[in-house]
Length: 55
Image 1: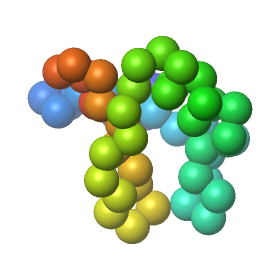
Image 2: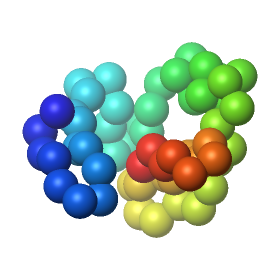
Image 3: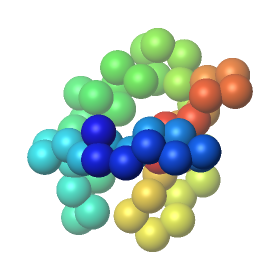
């Protein structure tokens, strides 16, 4: 974790990059666990599950 604020926690992960996004296997694990892919803005992709969000 690199930052904590009112909007949530911010993490850095060396396997994710602006050029390639998240690893394919991680994207499949999100999908298998009920996360829905939302909008993309630049290098950021939003995933949602209920009231929770991952960008």
